[in-house]
Image (tube, rainbow, N blue to C red; front, side, top):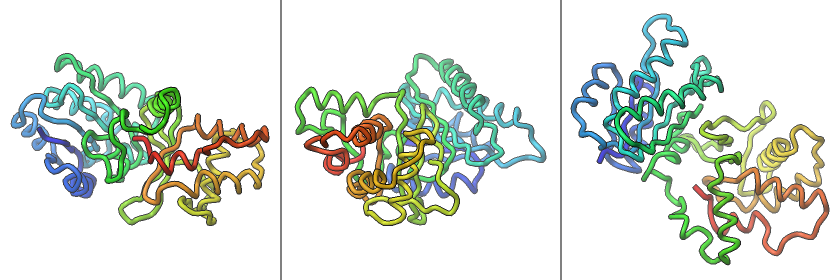
Length: 294
């Protein structure tokens, strides 16, 4: 089975293809309409586990409608190739891409599902992301998780009692929760985004602020302040709370990547705002032990 199929302009697909081949080996790429048609005709049905779509190189001035049409037509052409449980990632990194509009994202998701359904019964997942970094995309594709990613849910926090394990798994797999993701890009620079439903967008931080984690330095404080601000919704932030948050939550995070749910962060913040006694095991220690749940 082909682990991943990439379509779009050569400039966008080449760096990602190299990274995906390092993780999962068999990757097919097409950077033109003829190339996409050749893949559709040449690959076996239901043989592709993941599909990443960039827009093709622009041909003159193109309206936003033409770009949306291109995405749906390409999906419809390649739909028969996708396995029943394939993952589809639509990459909208260009600020002018209409797929960066939430209303277009919702419509694309529905149209993509309709196009994919024409190939038969499927359980295909469609996501739209605004950053083309390999770390962001490999997290979403099957069998291409970065080194150090967790195993099956049955192994997640396996040393915990069933009731606690069940609660953790429900938190990890909740689709209504916002998830905050941290990773290192190709240059080794830290990046933080938030996953809401199927859309990954950058975490809002003040201009010229560099975020970091795995320590208690200025970057970790900037990240802690941004996360607390997201949870509190613009309320005044107590710097003492930031200091404790950085020490207990940000400092213990793994150096290469992390994942935190807004539900867990909200619980931690409310507990400390209410000045309750800390739990025997704080959030940071739990994350350090179990690793980022992806």
